[in-house]
Amino acid sequence: MPVAASLKTVSKLYGTFAALRKVTVDFEQGRWYVLLGENGAGKSTLLRVIAGLLQPTYGTVLVGEGPPHQGRDRIGYMSHAAMLYDEFTAVENLRYFASLYRERPCQAPEAALDAVGLDPTLKRPVGQYSQGMRQRVSLARVLISQPELLLLDEPFSNMDVASARQMLALLAAQRAQGRTVLLTTHQRELAEPLADYVLTMMAGSVASLLATETAK
Ligand SMILES: Nc1ncnc2c1ncn2[C@@H]1O[C@H](COP(=O)(O)OP(=O)(O)OP(=O)(O)O)[C@@H](O)[C@H]1O
Image (cartoon, rainbow, N blue to C red; front, side, top):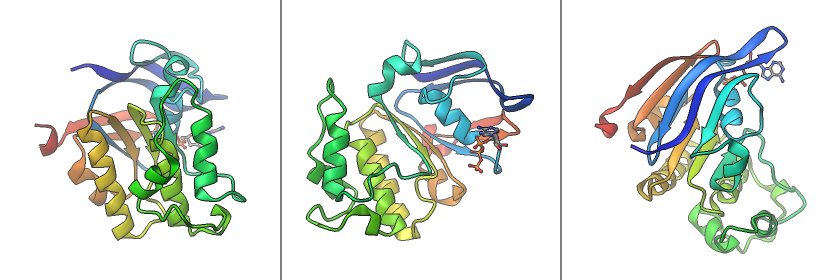
């Protein structure tokens, strides 16, 4: 099975505190991983290291064949913070983000919004959107460049269950197209039924990596 991302003895230290401790794990291409663990277990740090936003203190991270910054265009990262321009409409936000990808064909902003269940004709700036709507725009921002590796940090944290389920269906469609999804959540009952693997972190280490029925 080809590997989308791989970590070898990766540690991330803040002073003497280890947010990640000697993490070694391969993420197979086209699979869906749910990352679980208590607050502070290191889930966000793991995603940020794979996204190339954090440099590990020790160890090696590969995305495909190379380091994360080489594969940057192939990665879609969605953090807790929405990373949107509040004074712009959703279409304007997406048009701007799409313009940052020079080498990569992007979806039309309207199509990306439609795909996440938002009305592309809304003229309100996203600063006036509800949190759930902002998260949909964030997901559209991530999906617009059609990345092969999706790193999603708590994508449904402020959503109602119906919206979260819609978003999960959308992500399932991404996976069906061969994309790899790594998703952290505290709502395991929502995401776990669709996942191939459940990775549980504890105090900066991988406590377990278990295949679900879906993976078999
Ligand atoms: N810049 C930083 N400086 C010092 N400590 C940090 C820094 N960033 C993260 N940490 C610490 O590293 C640990 C892991 O944080 P991380 O955000 O990866 O956890 P998490 O599993 O994603 O938690 P949550 O579920 O609360 O988001 C935490 O104890 C956090 O306080």
